[in-house]
Image 1 (cartoon, one colour):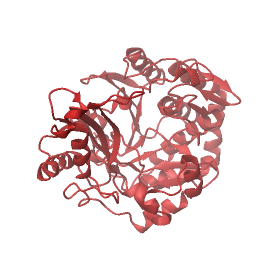
Image 2 (cartoon, one colour):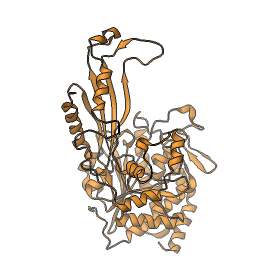
Image 3 (cartoon, one colour):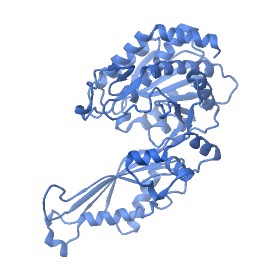
Image 4 (cartoon, one colour):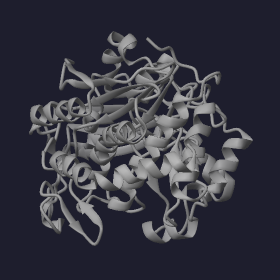
Length: 462
């Protein structure tokens, strides 16, 4: 995008700031908490209303849960899709909010509301960018597809089935994924992929009821039984013992490692923040960076059995359970690993330990040298005035694989969040300056990508 076109785009964004802010405030007023089922219909309808307001054709596509809001506008050789979600996290604990979570409030140029960073600020910024582009520069040079999910905050249980059923509808040459933030120095950061996840509950029962602890002389204790089963899954060096667990892990390339080093991870600051004398296994430097981004995890998320209240209760628990999440890296398969977890427990003599699959998402990533990544980086450099940071693989998870990589669509995650947006926490926020720049950046990507004929971007366009 040349400077004259950029200035025209900026002028329209500035002229329509009140409108674009109003759209975002309306979205943030909706308490669309999927986990509680509040205002989900109203928020889906609002997304459709905003899309229709810029001239998009829209529909709500039914799933087994909340619908996906779909919109399409423009035409051209290429298709760019946007994935965002219209559901948000519960606002608890309410007492820690400085202003009501669903009454968006601006303080010193920062907008506070539940869901403003995750993910409504990004969702509305995409719509505003398409509107601003058309007003400033004329017809869109490509086709845009908007895919707004309503269940991301509860694990996207219906996205895989949706993607399989709607493959032709969501086909695109590239996708802008839902989120992006700054580092502590204000440098804009993008992510090229997400770890997958395998979420499992383990449960063991010994006696039929809890017993007086004197029976521990001859009756097995469920808590000890579960502890021993867990020891069959992970050793003292944090090595996961599931059969062939690491067999399909793809190691980082030197280019990946260079990108990780550029992130300038503050080891000392993080240890101080978390009160740690050292990271796991004493990791530091390149080994720490590679472990964080390119190695899987096995985490006990919750563990319960017996009595844990105040005072004494000498009880022998008959039942114990835990929840475990495994964050997975390319090319691990969560369903394959769940079967191997079951086999590993059985081989170690723990056939009695029940294993229930609670969630599974494949890892996904776009290669760092993909042409679309360069489009995003080049346009960001011009928009923000500094060299952006590229994170090859985010430690988090989401439904990127079924919506993008499964269909051959490269994806880059970027957004309007800041270094302290407080996602999932009280006082979630974005800086308004990031919102305006985020709209401009999407407009620049539309311009650059729409004119990128002859380049290989992958993805099948319907």
